[in-house]
Every structure is written in structure tokens, then in C-alpha cells.
Length: 488
Image (cartoon, helix red, strand yellow):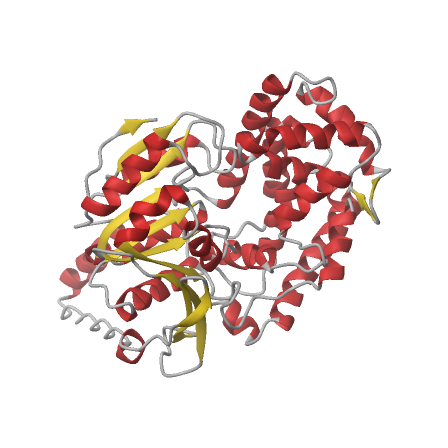
């Protein structure tokens, strides 16, 4: 910013010295005409008990709205009485399906007051789930093979080069296997999801948006608040992401968040096989060279780490995680592998939802790109310093390598959101959230001038999960707009 101001001042000074006429600034291009999208009639049809489904048509590229179109999958549960409007929901990811979240909320007792007053509408962001086209990279067999390989554990020069070759090939596969290829990948980021969200608001007939976003869904919400602040009615952002954090910083802090959750788990567990970080490492490091039998598959070291990640997301999963780690000590990796399968969204028939491919495709265009190998190595070291339980393999660091050679450039960059005329929003952040550490929620609340609800616990996202204090505060806010800083 300072450099830009300096250059502008210099230009004015030179113009004065030469007596040349001041240049006339070019007029800003008019915004694209999106009326054919914002006024579309959604063709709802039954797709379950008290549920309707539809597809929203949006431009593939908002810079060329008269060109190709893509669709966004929708699911709705209609308000039972005294309808206020629509409550649009997204579960995060990137790669999470809002349609599945809306269907789940329709059966959630804690959500009953919202089901009375709102049409609960879930959307699958472009490229995800029931949206078309869907981001596609690896086949199921290729994904299984990648998980079984512990190439990430080889940090020798040759191992690093092999990792880089594999991640470069991965990006190329995404461009080749996804319909519209690079053109689509260049338009799947949060920038474009936010534009789709405003088209959805208009097509639903809502003058203003009421929104519930979890995890990455909070990033969508914050970006929408910046782009369309006057179109916001109310927003709950749970498991908040700080949009000012760069890719490296977010991964380093997330790794530390999982270490914090593991520390809480080991204190609770008091079990000999996973009663400390050192004990956990002694349990899983042998898998680097000798994977464990897990039914007709095997549990690799990377899957053991990923399965542990998955088991740390919510305290309610800790008894099952404890049993899974005990099984590993007995030579059986089946349950911990099931945790990893759940994380990767692999079903019992071996099919993947595509969420992991969508995750990388969105993250790689949402952040400034890091290509310097020395910086990437330092980032890996920082992750391990803050999360020693990862030593020997760090699943999420492959993201840095994948994004460094991604086939399309970023369309967004991390920054503090600039919001004006934004109504009061509500950020929910958990003190020991492993995936989105508490401070991120504190920071986002300051940036958006939101009310901050702090939940004291070990859990990733909590609203409508049965905590009466949190649920009461969030529901009251969504219905009547009342929100204040509080702790639950």
C-alpha cells in the first residue's frame, strides 16, 4: 500500500513539473448483468422425507456470464410455521456438502426452533457433491495407493523430489479429469463460491442472507460479508478461520491445535499405549516400514496419523479412538483405518466423495503461492516443532507441495476483511478446537466487529450439537438478531 501511494504521489509531482494534463482515469467496467441467474426459478422436487432438492445455475466464469454455466446442488427443509426466510448452511471443508448438513439438521432436535422459522437450505459449493461438474483428480484405486504409501516420511533429497513429482502429477490429473479442466479449476475458489451464494440468496427470494457456516464455511461467510455487507441479515460463523492467515501459518497453527487436542486426550486417556506424545510415537512409528493388517487392507503410518486426527475432532469420539489405538498395540489396524476412511470420506465400497480433491483445488487458489523449497522445508520444521506427535510424517504438509505447482494461479489472497455497514454477526470459537484454534475466532470477531461466543471444550464446531448454552445463544441471534460476547 505504501509503495502504491508513493508511486501515485510521484506521478502527480511529475505531472506538475512538466505541466502535462492530468490523465483521465478509465471508468470502472460495469458489473456483469446477472439477472438471468438471480431471477431464475428453482425447480424443487422431493428428495426425502420433508426434503426438496434443486440445482442453481451460475456462470462458470463471472467475468463471462454469457458463456458456459455450471450448477450448484441444493437441498431444502421448508419452515414449519412463522417463516422468517431461508437459513443457508455450509459445513466447511473445503469439499463439505451443505446438502448433507441441511438433511442432518432437519433431524436434529436442537435445531427445532430454526426448523420452525426458516427454510433450511444447504448448498454444495461448485465442484462439490451434487454440483456439476464435480472436481475429480485421483481414482479410488489411486487414492488408496497414495494413502498406503509413506513417501511423505522420506525427507531425503531424493524423497523430496519424488514427493514433488507426485504432487505435480496430482495437479495435472485434476486438470485432465475435471470437466472444463483448467478453466473450471480457475473458478472454484471462495471468490466464486461467494458470488454463487449471492445469486442463491436472490433466487431464493430473500432480500438479505441469513447464513450458518462451520469451519471453512466461516471463510465463505467472512468473504461474503466483505463482498456484500448490505445483503447480510444474520451470520453465525462456528469454528472460525482467520482470513488474514497465510497457508503456512494456518497449517502450522492447525498442527499445534491437534497437538493441543492430543495432549488433552492423553491426559483423559491415561492409557499406556497413548498416554503421552512419546508413547503415541512409539506406537505408530513402526508403521512407516511395517503397516498393520486391517481386514483386507493395511494401516500405513500416514493413515494412523490421519485416523488420529479424525478421532480428535470431538471429545465424544475419544473412547472409540482409545480402543482403536489399543487395537494397534495388539497388531490390528482396522478401527484406526476406519477413522481415516471417515476423514477422507471413503465409503465401505471403496468410493470416495471427492471432498479431498475439492479441498486441494479450493485451497490452492485461495492463498498466495509458496514455491521456495527452503521456505517449504522451514514450514515443515515449524509444524513438527509445534506438533511433535507428527514426527515421521506430516499429512497436511503435502498441501504446500501440491499448491506450489498447481496448474492455475490463485484468485484470492489472505487479508484482513474490509467490511462496512455489516450488521452484527456471531462468531463461535472453542478453547481447544484442534482444526481451527480458538485465537482464529477471536481474530475474526474483531475483524468483523462480531459478538464472540467462546465455548470451553475440546471440539471442532459446536452449534446445534446439543450444548444448551451455545444453542440458545445462536438460535436467539438467528431469529431476532440479539447477540453479545459470552462464554459457555
